Figure 1 (cartoon, rainbow, N blue to C red):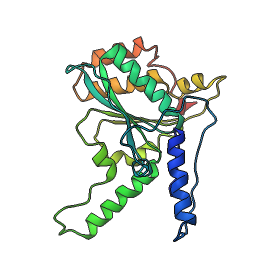
Figure 2: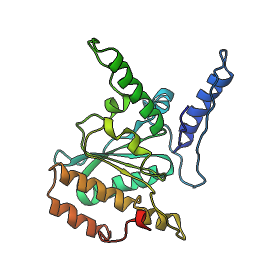
Figure 3: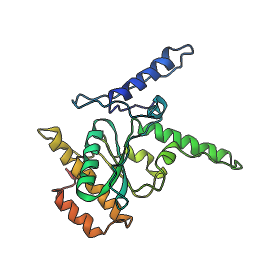
Figure 4: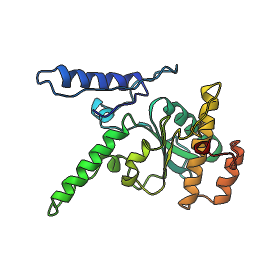
Length: 238
């Protein structure tokens, strides 16, 4: 089982149920589970309607629909892993309130599982060239090309969400904590590593500009409105 990163208690419960069943059920498997949880306090929501244990265990699922901003709103998709899902939710509200962007929110308990599934699909297709219906990676089905740009944020290195980038649309941005830095609060540290709500919102708007949905000048203006210094030192260079 690839390491799951639980954002909420109901995700953790799904993982633990699955682990107990596989390791200690009627037919015990030779597997182990390594679960990452966090020591940050925040509200625990109920499981969204229609989300099953299987959805959680497959690696990514839609946590919240986009806000209804009317037909002229620009669509986007935001992915959060672990406690950074809270920053993603705040970025969704920021995009809706200030910039007219309607973003769906996805929770990604396991990017490694998504990559494993995609590699298995690629291998099967490679070994079955005459198959009439090639296998499609799960991450490609739940996050298809249409639906707007995708921004994924994690408090691990960018390499984690980058694990699935080749199976997603070109306007896919991975944000993480590459580099070195210390701060007195989590909020300041997340701003330093550019995974706080303003940076997630800015990445979304720049992605919309890159795909022609909004003018580049509008994205540039938004960066300043969000209080971001575009010339600050890259945390990777620290």
